[in-house]
Structure formats: structure tokens, C-alpha cells
Image 1 (cartoon, one colour):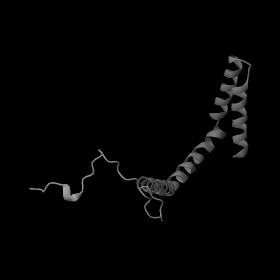
Image 2 (cartoon, one colour):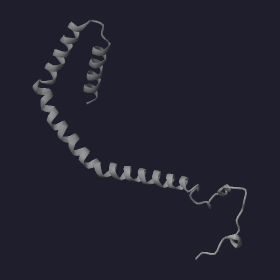
Image 3 (cartoon, one colour):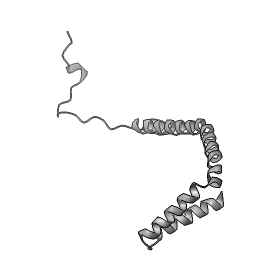
Image 4 (cartoon, rainbow, N blue to C red):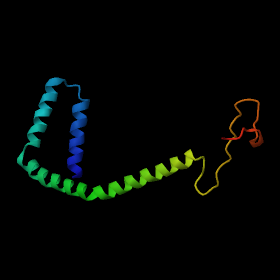
Length: 114
């Protein structure tokens, strides 16, 4: 598998880096297509595709659990920041609400509720 990856990477680098023009690009593209559609390559594509599909199916529960754990951790951290706390420490002092006017009303000065 390592050799195949290297050859594909080298071919892609050559195609992308070449200054030989469109004609050479078309030649390379036709050669790559010919190799891709050859029986030896296609005989390996089916099993590789099936293996990748099986491994992906097996990895879904693990990936899902890790994603949920990460999301939960970030949500808890965001909630802690929103509460102006650090987990495991008491609430930080919050600034008092600024008065709306210079007059302070004490509970004795409030009119009785009816």
C-alpha cells in the first residue's frame, strides 16, 4: 500500500508541477486512466473498498462517543464561564447593579402593597 500511495503522489505532483502543457497533461491523464481501469488494479479496489467500509462502520460508535464527550466537556466549560465560576471554586464576586438614580429606596420607604 505504501508503494501505491507513493506512486500516486508522485504522479499527482508531476501532473500538477509540470510545465509541459496541455498535451502532456492529457497523455498523463490517459495513462493514469488506463492503469486505474486495468484488471489488476480493479481486482484490488473491491476488497479495499469493502475493508474501508467495514472499518468505518466499526469506528462509528467510537467516534460518536468521543464527539459527544468533547461536546459535553465544552458545554460544561461554557456553562461554568457563563456562571462566572471555575469548576471546583466558589462563585466569584459579582459587581453590584448600578443605581438607576441617586435616590436609594429602603424597604421601609416602599408603599404598602394592596
